[in-house]
Image (cartoon, rainbow, N blue to C red; front, top):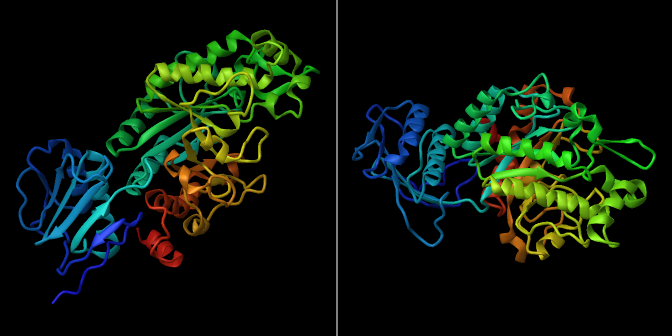
Length: 478
């Protein structure tokens, strides 16, 4: 007597739903969340889902009628990844299984959203997995101070959307926002304590979100250089290059490396972003003429063919080596990785592609043709810049939802499909250029729908089944 079920209404939408006839599942008086025998590593996921649904958990136990069962199921089909899961709704029960805790956790997000959007989890089988391994949100906490509580709320929001990264850009010209033991003199008055950072990191880890720190260098170091003015880069006329450190001086590297090592220990995740964008010396039309001291050092190190870009590339490689030695995968912005030159950027540095506007910002296909792995941070779609300077406008989410995919790395045109597997995913980025243009609450409200659109397209880049108006309405309901 039941009609065939339809897929649960969730963000991101599930990739595959096999319909069936039946009432589905909704939490009832006798419902509980249980962990399958041998799957005790899912205890935290079980407690969280039970609390969210307002039902008890019975720990490791056999499921009864009305229960949600969580199970680790190693192996599975060839398509199974650690973030994949299968959800079966049948006979008044839900079973979520996956090869790893992360996949099962994402299954619990589907249950939570289905109950919230439709009152019940539809009958049938869901087979779901992300299209890309890196899916996230980045927040510029250097130009604008965000409280630990605000960042924790973003972690929870990201996790519910099956996003798995939170980037923290915490050092820039305006401020340095995390307490330091190695160089306390660089820390701004408003900052996060290390205890607060550890709390954020622990919450993120419990929700399968990796926190990615970024110390941008050799540009964007104004806050560090305010405490070390002798290390500021100067041009041929003696004018200070804003935010740029003198990469020819050994002391410059020592200070930055002290900070990299210190924060590599504070952030236990896999990644560390070392910046490399918008170094003032390389934004000059003729770097060698504008910065003759750097040019002379480049020739001393690399011979007559040496250029300022070679010094900057060596700087990038050296900083990548520091975080690599700490067990991290280095990341860098695309406009810090140049074509040609005597020195080549290390091949394993992940390219975070954000722009084609800057000098040195090559077309994305060039990086891909070199075999480099790329993360999509396309400033045309994925930048939320406070105050909307430099022709930026606040994204609504609609263009992301209808036009953007991870292949659209620059502007509006996708790169060839053959490069797809080198594109690791995408991140929505909040930049606080005009920090007082919005409050914390306004930022949270402004990014809500576009972040959901990004979550949809990095989970499944195909044309979504829901039209935009329905997706926006679902976003408001969830």
